[in-house]
Image (cartoon, rainbow, N blue to C red; front, side, top):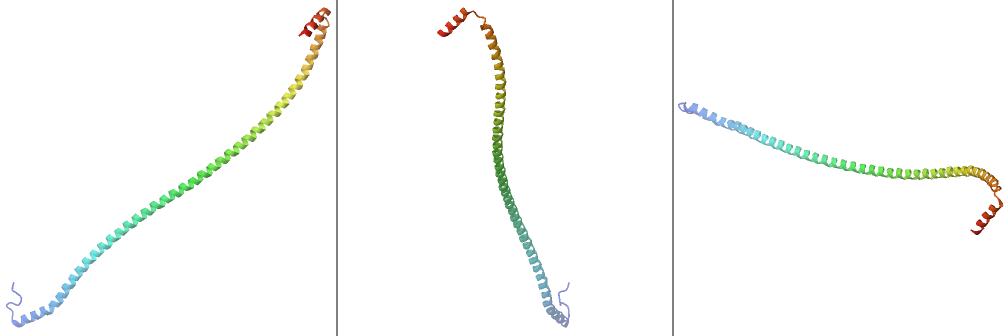
Length: 170
């Protein structure tokens, strides 16, 4: 290949040199623009990578914060649930104490009523028994007295004297 301008007439060479001189700023500008484009692309790529990395870091941080907040809220919910359950337990304990107190009072009332009924039944039964026994006892005593009169009336006077003497000395 022949070098630029070698073997060419000088007027032609001058035109080529002049064209090169005119072309050089355009070529340089084009090369500058290509270089600027390459630099802009590289910077854009770096910026994109940095923005993606920052976005990922921010997303990770937000995720950690959300997880922390979720854990905190879960713990708070558990604490509130435990408090509510403790209050319910206390309420149930109070209700149980009140039920025991009422049951004891009802038991005492029922025992008292049962004792009163038992006393009334006992008194009535005892009264009826005494009345029945009294009537029967009077009847038996009257029969015994009649029998004794009959038997004692048959004893001879000497025997009566002996019985009286023995009983007087005692």
